[in-house]
Image 1 (cartoon, rainbow, N blue to C red):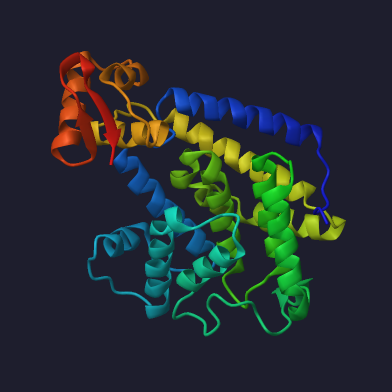
Image 2: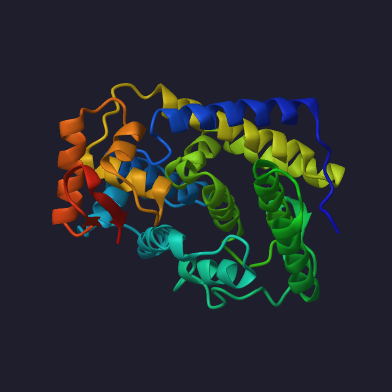
Length: 318
């Protein structure tokens, strides 16, 4: 069955605004942001997603762990960060439409933290806020069919991917398939779903904005639980997505290096042959000589192959 929700005027408006922003991102060559910005945003993503779950490590400590430096802190918190780094580094190998891939990601994310990492829970759970039970998850014998239905919706429904990613995030949180790690898996998997269609989302720190609005995040989940549909949560997450794209576009003086341009063009041309003229057409802000230097650098460093010479030269990524 298709998960229940309504398409509101607010949802339609936000989808239109997000689509415009994605167009602006592509025009500004930010669909794969510069290297330093990608690193900075990845650290913010890991820090925010884990801080929501109670991790105490700072941005500086997480940066040190990424750089293989020694960090003093709670062992559990350090392991959570190392696992998060591992799963985000593994994103390209994960299939957003595969339940097996979903379980594999949970196994990496929760490795050493719980005994059942990568496996569905085998007992009933409830979510307690203060002295109140905020949510009772479906019983364990319903988990596999519920998750199969959810992945079937994700793969086969004609909804826009922006909406499907929000619906998946909410429904997965509602089903609560794992004994622990459901929150970080919901946020990770929405990123993976969006990244599959829009590469910019791989390095967009959506979790940082969720952390800033943590109360509203849980409030929207609660309201959706109470109404029996994900409409309120979809509206909330689309707002977060729109704001994260706006933040990216508002960063001033972003300059792409030759490596940035080479990797960005690979995501556009993929395995097709191309010429220097086609490369230059995509980066109108650089000179013909700079384009030649970029391509020469890529050839010398084994990133692309060159066929032919001078004006007849063609290139192809390895």
